[in-house]
Image (cartoon, rainbow, N blue to C red):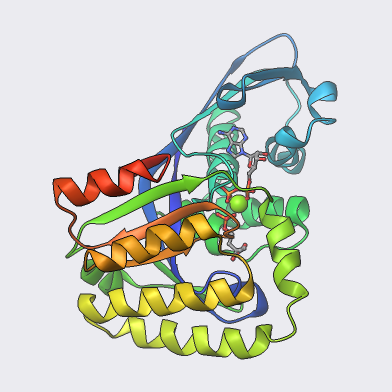
Length: 287
Ligand SMILES: Nc1ncnc2c1ncn2[C@@H]1O[C@H](COP(=O)(O)OP(=O)(O)O)[C@@H](O)[C@H]1O
Ligand SMILES: C[C@@](O)(CCOP(=O)(O)O)CC(=O)O
Ligand SMILES: [Mg+2]
């Protein structure tokens, strides 16, 4: 079974403290296959790891898949394999994508017929229990596969916002590997004294974006990025890509927890501009 990834257009980190975030699903996905087997084996293809259940429980990289299996309390053994187009730990919700694809695959294999709402709830519980803190942004956007406005862990669909954004091309620049995981970056923000003032400014930007045209959305993305930089979750590499995208007349900002990872770029890039960006990033996707 498949599950997409996600980008956060506005409000990451603020959303963990009850402010608003706007998120969109993207067409990079994770695939989880399950087949009958004599014992429970899990394979993480992108990380070249294959372990039995007991061994996997000791390896950090398996924790999302293990927690999903434990929550569903499935009994019979099986062989479960994960492979994803999403670069790992770089803000595209790879963890949530793995969790949702795993729960969808378990639901199908064991004929649990879990409804979308239940899959979203279970996936969020997995992220929360593994990370210690997690808004519903990643897991709900990926479970429902629609653009969402999230606030205080409530959500509503914002198809109009997605339609406006989709008037332009959306690129994802995978800039650099993250030194820290999502949970660590959430901790960095929690120690920032001025975080509440910054969250309030991000909140204003996010609310304005909901009713803005695509040109204004591009400007607001750049403003949101500056505030994430003030929160301490951007890097020199991310800032460099944002500056270049701005020079090319695009909107741009880091997406997800930050600390490296990805920048989203909204607007049209000609071949030369794409080449200049590709020179300073690991990969550039059209999302
Ligand atoms: N392709 C994958 N295969 C197996 N596990 C994955 C994969 N992608 C992500 N994960 C799990 O999710 C973790 C990364 O989660 P996180 O730091 O939240 O990154 P992201 O910002 O992409 O959600 C990895 O350490 C691993 O446990
Ligand atoms: C930092 C945060 O707002 C987004 C994390 O996104 P990701 O795990 O980097 O894809 C945390 C959350 O909303 O769960
Ligand atoms: Mg994650």
